[in-house]
Length: 113
Length: 256
Image (cartoon, rainbow over all chains, first blue to last red; front, side, top):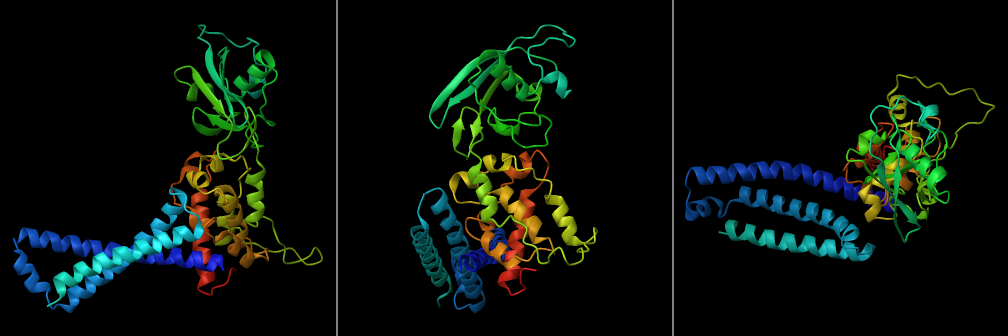
């Protein structure tokens, strides 16, 4: 059913937008804190390595980015790059996997003990 | 005002200082064609429709254009005026041709029949595809439905019901340009008025018809339709309502 699927994807994009709004604020606050207190790279790694909380936070952030951006990319692919239905879907799915893989790799790099 | 303006070329009204003629570029031909230039005398309170009528009556009787009421009721005279879709009958030349030049094209996003006439068929076919028809639940044998004028549904329908189908929003919508299947602001606005009609019995079918990637979920909320609607309606608001209604249907709340 097209209507169910499209409505679900719209709702998922809305929901991930809410998650992103929260994550971006925390991320910005973290950056400002790290810069203003002059934390060194090793000091930052000392706090993130082995931390479940930072791993979970940035893991959720990355997944939300991958899903949200890919849903937007699906429409851009159809409307601007003139891709037909399934081609745009595959393109968007590939984009989601790429973003998730790159993001989760970066998260692993700072969190893995 | 309309009567005086409807007699182009007759300089009956108070003259004032003579003004330079309008330079008017008019689209001639079909999908392929070119602009033709005309010089049209300025008149007080002159509308763009007056200009087109003057050209057709005095300069070139082969010019094709469409109008009916001349007073902003029928929605048939919309064209692209200096790049924007407008009702020509309610657009004063002074407001849009500050430098004395007008460029007139048929409405965008629609096939061109000839000159300034756009083919409105796909525009209205999409109203039908969006299930813009009222589907009564009862027959004439049953008593009248009672709708509280203060109810939320009645007020939502009221806010969207005055559309006269001129196609200005459809011609101005970028999503229509990018996605030829998109139902467009007017058809979705019509569907929203029926979603808010408790007498209608096709709610589920209507929401399933509009909640697609060629329906309400294709809208990017750019609001060009809302900015340019000559009736000051907000199709964007109606489309947002359809998105919420489709989510309620998905979550099992039903279409009622």
